[in-house]
Length: 204
Picture 1 (cartoon, rainbow, N blue to C red):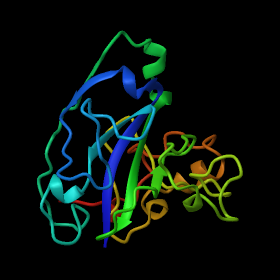
Picture 2: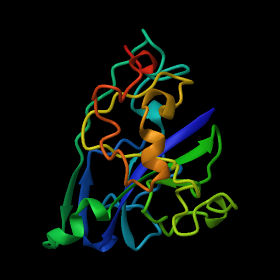
Picture 3: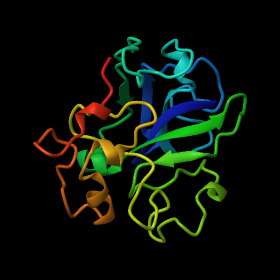
Picture 4: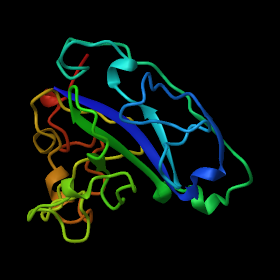
């Protein structure tokens, strides 16, 4: 079993620029321990932890909303960040919004196993030994040589596959998009005719 924790780094904002953060659900200091202003301790760049364990947000026993016919209501959360002074809007773009998770075997207290989206960099708190291997891209440690990645971000609501069903089987053009470096089928996740094998999509 894995414990998943989530946070994001504002890549162009210093931790000292943050006045306060409200809306976090931490429950403990593992793996994220925070300063009084809501940023993570030990980092000069603003890392904003969201939660330390999924179970702090929602109760579940095995799979969470991935098995057809099984559904647990998840909460809507609002996070408010206040800054000490004005921040240039160019420093708060999606390109500088570095979302990531920390994955640990249940019971572990490690902080370093960060999983980021493609093109984004690890934080100063990451353990670089986890971002090694011959199959990883030379230019992006959160992608494989063939273009496959650990995480995705969508501009709209995403219909995800059922438990144990592969994304590239459910979305028929996902593999072409990934292998082409994002040049082909840029709309692979949309509900166009011939794009989705609907029988593999999770239904609550």
